[in-house]
Image 1 (tube, rainbow, N blue to C red):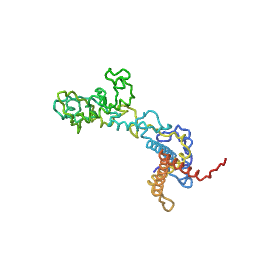
Image 2 (image 1 turned 30 degrees about the horizontal axis):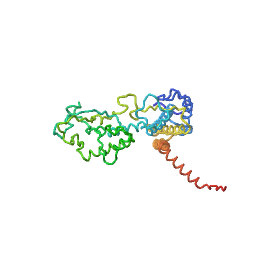
Image 3 (image 1 turned 120 degrees about the vertical axis):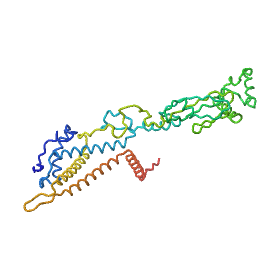
Image 4 (image 1 turned 45 degrees about the vertical axis):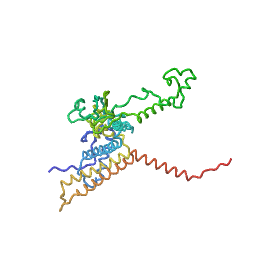
Length: 387
């Protein structure tokens, strides 16, 4: 059996010694690599005890720890900002970009809801027309759609708006108040306009006066005459009054159910190179040089835990070793248990620290600070000036 590798306290340069080489060209990573190897070996008992690892094992753990730190940081940023990131371009890395918590995608969501109310949205509306039939009150717009709307199999329409209205009141401007006490005619005779018709066209009144009169005329028609209305249930249309010989054409607007249910309908429909999920948000591995002291300390501790776990697996291959007159049992179980506990504690601490930096937490803290400051200032005696 070949002799097992034993750490000798003189690690080789880290450049070109890692598995993926993510950070090999970073001067700070190159400088810290041998130091981290010695730090981890010392934590494992070197030089008092042999450590059955070499510098490449320590460098693998170091690279893994830096990558894990970056993944935790950037996954947190993605979770905190995803509503602002979705739909953005994937071309440029966001590692050093301040993500603006804009309301663009919130507006997009509101636009989709607005489509149901006819107030925006990204669902196309189409127009249709239906010839009314003398003395026929009920019409099936589903049947019209199958015959006229060019629908795909299984598709249907959603009727959005029906144009079935009387001629506007301003067109049939009959003044029900003329001669009923307002005495417009007598006023016009004063200016010599009484012989001109219609008299109201030559008298200057405030605009709101005309609007009120139009509303009054429409209400008069609604109460005193048969008004135009309709009832729509499941695209079954019933119109009032029943069409007569002057039936005419009824026009309406509709959308296709397939457009409403299409998940890709929106401002980015058909576009490419856009953020569509957490997996393509453009965050790269961190730049080690830019990681601050608290971050590097976390990385050193996580590297040591990974090295301890690796040593535990190595010693599991050789559970006992011979010594003069006896044999000794290796501590694989203790190493693995301690390593996994330390890793879990470090991840939990990092995630807890990150959770304290969410926008919600920061705003809550600022609000608490403001309340505490107001309370403190409220206890300060106020001077009374006597003039």
